[in-house]
Structures are given as structure tokens and as C-alpha cells.
Amino acid sequence: MFKKIHLLIGFFIALYFLPFVEHKVVFFPIVLIASLIPDLDSIVIPKKDYKTLKFLNSQSYREFMHSYTFCILLSTLLAFFYPILALPFFLGYSFHLFYDSLTVDGINPFWPLKVKTKGLIIPGKNSEKAIMIILIILILFFILRYLF
Image 1 (tube, rainbow, N blue to C red):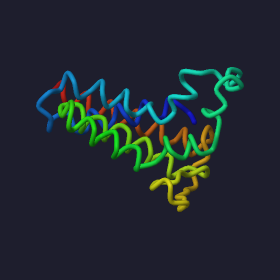
Image 2 (cartoon, helix red, strand yellow; image 1 turned 180 degrees about the horizontal axis):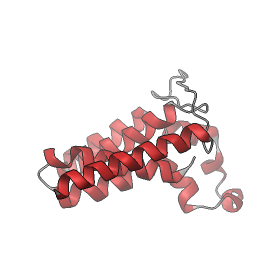
Image 3 (spheres, rainbow, N blue to C red; image 1 turned 90 degrees about the horizontal axis):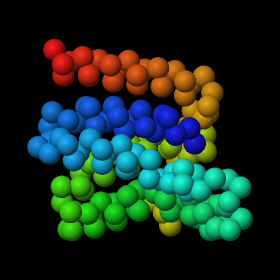
């Protein structure tokens, strides 16, 4: 998946919700980090190293990481142990999943159920580039709004 789009989505979501949160310094980076966590395997471990960690390349691992089941589980654990992190984590992670559900690859939102959601967006193609441009414009709008 195109990592830039997930970072832009996280940035946009963080800016959108920023006026409504109390701990802005914690909120912003947690949303950004959480927006990348579902694709952690492809960020941390290059494709050539998948031979050593085969489970990271498995379809079941991807389905688990790209599910609201896992998102809600982690958010609930954070709510108990680090409540300040729960909302930004949930927002970043869930909007990553929402976007992935709009792609042609889709996701299994409620793993282990086999129900799959798919959309029409092809990663790396013109539709995704258009979304990136729209997100950049919206991000600039929010930044200017907060500054003036």
C-alpha cells in the first residue's frame, strides 16, 4: 500500500480533530503513528527479508492487522492502561482501515469473519493521486485556518 496516502490521511484526521482534544501534543503524533501501524510489516521489514519471517507475508496476518477487530482490541487495551492514547490511536488506525476498505484489495473488517469490503481505488493510480491532492489541499486549508 502507498504509505504516503496513509500518512496524509493521518495528518488530515489529526488536524480535523485537533480543536476538540485537550492533549494536542500527544494527540497529533499518536494519530500519525497509528495511521501507519496496519502496514507495519512493510515499513519495518523489507520485502526481501520476508523469507525469515514468513508469517508477516501471510494473508491471515494481513487480514488480522487490517481488521477493526484488532483496532478495537488495541484501543480498548490502551483505554484501560493509557487512556490519553486510546482516541488518537483508534482514529489513526481506523481511518487507515477505512481507506484500505475503499481499495480494490479491500479488507476483512471483522476478522475472523470472511466478509470482505472492497472499493474502486487502485493503489498508485490516478484515483489515489487525486485523493492525495485533495488531502494536501484540505491539510493546507486547516493549517491556514489554525494560523489565522
